[in-house]
Image (cartoon, rainbow, N blue to C red; front, side, top):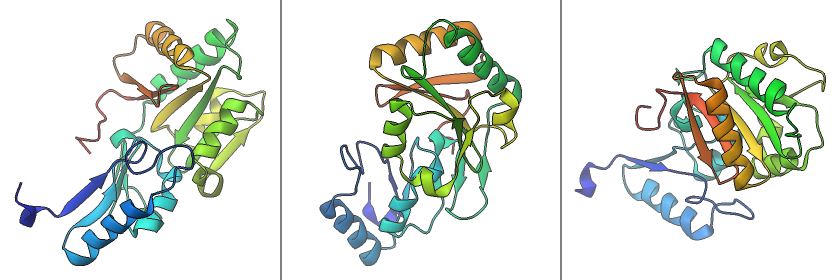
Length: 219
């Protein structure tokens, strides 16, 4: 590839731009990206599976001024502005996910300390009120959600409590182990049997559900 024709640097976030345990951009990495943007016509942006509400700090640190690709391609947006592209899960599919997770898996003994559902709508993340260690760990990893849009609903809830914040661009189920994530993914896909959805395993312990036709490449 002739570097003279490169105009955009697309950066993945987890395990590429940042790593556990602190999830901060290393000084060396930041310095290289800063130098590229200062000395060339190349602009940097983010292309990630994360919701846009959990990448604001990286946008600020890197001085990103172009739209970012978030939620595995379900959203393209410049932080702080309206989305340029937004492809949510259908209401019928989202309602079915909710029903199968809470009415089937939870009733079969999958407690909130084993798996926890987070519904990502246009303006933030919605979840039930809980002290689940899984939720606390997820929020520690995605701290920007605390500042840029997180909605807690009562423990006694219905699908409408989630839906009133808008259709979801993705539904994430955080679990306590890779084994639990694998079981949840297998059970949900079998129960839902929904060709309009795709199921991704992320970071080993998370299952994310999106529209079947969403991808970073398409975005």
